[in-house]
Length: 266
Image 1 (cartoon, rainbow, N blue to C red):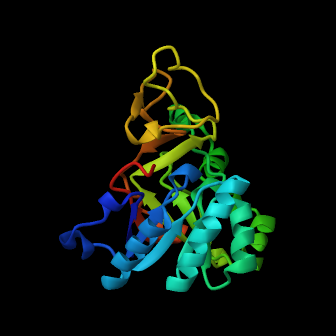
Image 2 (image 1 turned 180 degrees about the horizontal axis):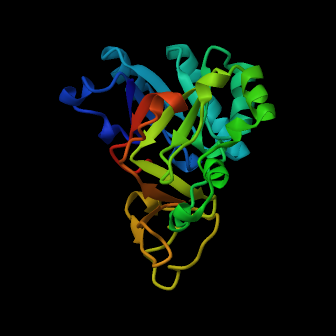
């Protein structure tokens, strides 16, 4: 089982004693183009990985045209420095990879796999028949047309969240491998940032796509409700859940890589 560590900031680079636990480093951001690393930060992490003989994966978010331009510069740097994986969560990013960066390996991100993430499902899970359970534990990867699209574009690895209700997939049957993110999974994300001006009196509830002060880097909100079986974690434009229980059917699913998130990936 390959073990990777996922960081979003230079200060999260693993200490020397931790390096022995991981053979790959994930770096970047899945949820906001404003949090993409600079070229200098990317080069620093590539150098860190190279010096320690670690494999490298760049993680990318859904983007606007402006974000795509910024990302293209990062991909140009990455393509010059090393052959590496790029996790895409936007089909425009995939198109860019296929057109201009054939030496980089595309990996389908977890924002595109259409898994059922709503924690309220756990309130009903014991009442559902097996056919319904299989549906809620599945993914769009089970659709043949979608698998054909992925295969046609040279994609053979997909990223998965560690669903509370479990995962019922057999990806090796279709020639795919999977990475499983531990312990944080995402529930939903939006370009309408939930943290903008959250510390400005009178604007706490204002939500939109506005210039920000990266409030997400300073504040984390924990949401509790009687309707929810677990505490939700809201950071920036994304809501997360935490699940540290590793599924027992990793081989059946096709998981051959664990992606460890030491902190919320935002």
